[in-house]
Length: 180
Image (cartoon, rainbow, N blue to C red; front, side, top):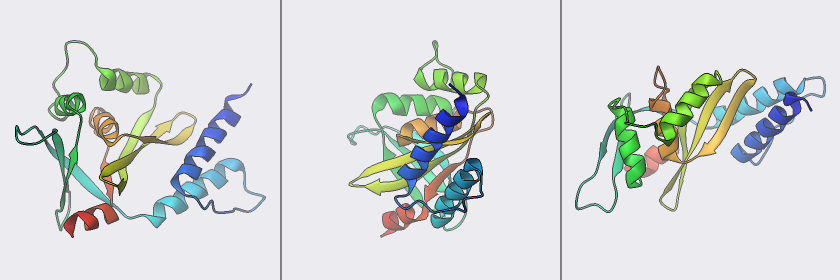
């Protein structure tokens, strides 16, 4: 069995998850070009803002820790995302480059990505529904680009643990909603 059909199938399922309407391409285009066109059109439909991870805080009066993100450019809007305690601890360690005594889940995943020559291109916060933030992890593998649906805390943890931290992007509509 060849690796190419499996990769194409996973890319196609990822594209379907991003957009319910899949654009059509000409019959003469190879599948790889058709997939890249779909991804490009999906991304151009959304406007993303570059965010920086400012802090991970646990205040005794709050129910859970939060990660605070800030827009990298004006109007410098901020976003607070609640996290589970273990995710907040891991993100704090990633933000301040504090090594653990033993590799944690995110450190293990980062090592595996590196050994498989896979780079995290970006962590994207793509939507907010009923108080839950949804994210995607955009990676480049030797076989091509892949986009994975994931928890926001996992996307942030993996993005910050790269040799050169991957950008954190947030969909404009989430920031606009938070302003209101």
